[in-house]
Structures are given as structure tokens and as C-alpha cells.
Image 1 (cartoon, protein in one colour):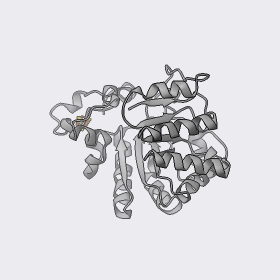
Image 2 (cartoon, rainbow, N blue to C red):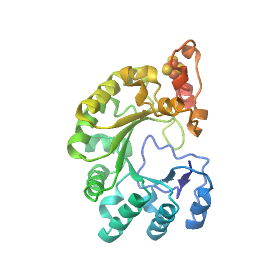
Image 3 (cartoon, helix red, strand yellow):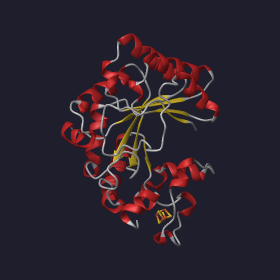
Image 4 (tube, rainbow, N blue to C red):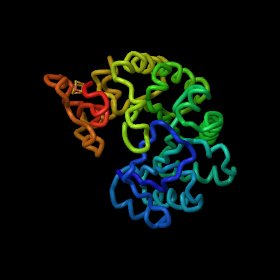
Length: 279
Ligand code: SF4
């Protein structure tokens, strides 16, 4: 599936930012270069930097172009600017993403303003993001909440589920995605051990199940997911025989020898192993 970095700029400074240092954002080329990237089939992941900082008309045209060619769009955003978009434009964008059969993927890293500030290093982002997500839901958009697990938020994973169920009611699903030690992130500084995260994550997944809130996990090996091994995006893909670019980012380690889940797990991320040496 194509992952299109519309631009490199962003209005946040997240400790987990995985914008690839080697990526060249097609700034200046705009719409034409985005359309050219559509040669690759599959879901069109529109990313940044922050896509909502791109030229608004070009962004809307691009989403409509995708919808017209029956290409499903995932519009990735930190959600901050959504609350401030003029109503007419906001409605057209929501309609265009919906027409494509797609959804908004909002990176939502915390259940509290204080923790959000430590993670995104951006004042006022939590309140704006919350308003943005509620506005999307009210307008009928499909919304995925991506919660990047890092050393500053993993103990509050169950609290985040309660917050999402209560304050962001109507979101379609939550993805718990483990931080990558790459891109603009602070190296390995905020990468916790899987074992430390596991009890909080398993509790959070149990809460989702109890609340009827759809969820999935990414970049966390199933051996740390308790009874939720099949919540793993990799596990689902591998069970269907699907292979994606993310598999190349992973490798088995000595601890994987003899593991009965190798058919649904490609191993931990290589950048995690660089930081922690083993699982
Ligand atoms: S293959 Fe390795 S990382 Fe994957 S579940 Fe087994 S032990 Fe865990």
C-alpha cells in the first residue's frame, strides 16, 4: 500500500515521531507527485509531517481523486488542526474521505493534558485534538485512534481506554502501536521493555473487550499479549498469508527459538533489539 508523505513539516514535536530521516517529502511537487505515488495498489496512507498543514485545496482534490478511482484513504493526523478548519471545508473533507471508504487515523497519545504535553511537547494540543476528534465523530467520520505506546504513557493504557470510551465515544477502533526507535524519535530513550508494558496492555485490551470497543495492536510480539495474540496486526496478516513492508523491519532473536507462534509472528522490531538487545 502506498504511504505518501505529503510534507515534512509538523506542528508537534512528539518523542515517538517516526518520520523517516531518509524520506524526501514531495514539497513543491504537490498534487502531481502524490498522484504519481498511487501506482502502488492498496489503501492510500496519507501522512506527513502533519498532512493538515498541506495545501488544503490540493489535499481535498487528492482525496477526491482517490475516491474517484475507488482507492480507500487513511488520512493520518495529530488532530490538532481539525478543530480549527472552516466548517464548509471540514465537511467536504469528511465527505471525501467517507466517499473513498476510508477513515481518519488520529494519533492520540494520552488521556491527560499533562502527559500529552510531555509526549508531544506542544502546548494546548490535548484540548485541540480532543475537540478535533469529537468534531469528526459528530460529522459521521470513521475514526481510528492510534495510541503510540512509549515510556511516558504505558502505565496509563487502561486509563486511556476508559478515556476513549467516555470522552471520544464513537471512535471506530483503537490501535495500540509500539514506539519505533527510528526517524525523529529520541533514539531509544522512550522505548520501554515489552515485559514492562505487557500487564498494562493486556488489561487495556481486556477493558476494550468488556466495553465492546474494537482494538488491535502493532509492533508488539504476541508473546506479550496474553490471551490477545490475535489482536496483533502482523498475526492477522500472516494468518491470511499477507506480507507487508513492516515484516522486513523485524527479525527473530535467540529467545524466539522453538516458539510455537512463529507462524503468526515475524519477531520483534530490529530497532527494539538495538535498544534492548533481547526481548
Ligand atoms: S517468535 Fe519471538 S517475538 Fe514472536 S511470539 Fe515467539 S518468542 Fe515472541
